[in-house]
Length: 189
Image 1 (cartoon, one colour):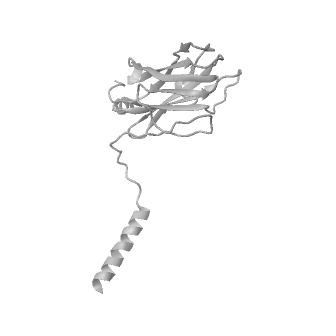
Image 2 (tube, one colour; image 1 turned 135 degrees about the vertical axis):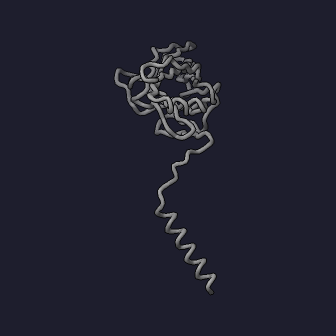
Image 3 (tube, rainbow, N blue to C red; image 1 turned 180 degrees about the vertical axis):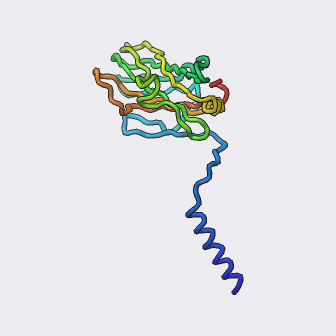
């Protein structure tokens, strides 16, 4: 009977402690896949490899997108770095299309840099009207403001790109499409 009472008290203490302790601040060791879905026309259910391609749209309005290159600009003042991202958008449909997109990098600890309304100092990458059969590689960039943050991105990351189709002078900040690519360790260095 004494053993049962001690076991019951131990279980109660563990339950109470588990409910009141603050979460651990340890960072996960593996890469994350922070793919989010949006109420748009398409959302991926996976993170593509760096060389992955995906078609956005359907019917006569399709655009094939792929990650072209990621470059790191030299340090600016105080060790800040700029990560430049080039995404190739090739019009595979039959009508001209124009896009604006924003890039976001998420490191293996779940910390994000850039995003909608932030990358390219808030304006994102912008294509001209791309005629059928042609492609463009506009520049987007994310500014990293600490050496520690930059070091975590060099260990690998996920690049999320949020595409908005530009059909008028007004640009909606609600993505029409979302694509995510894996950025292998050492690509950002």
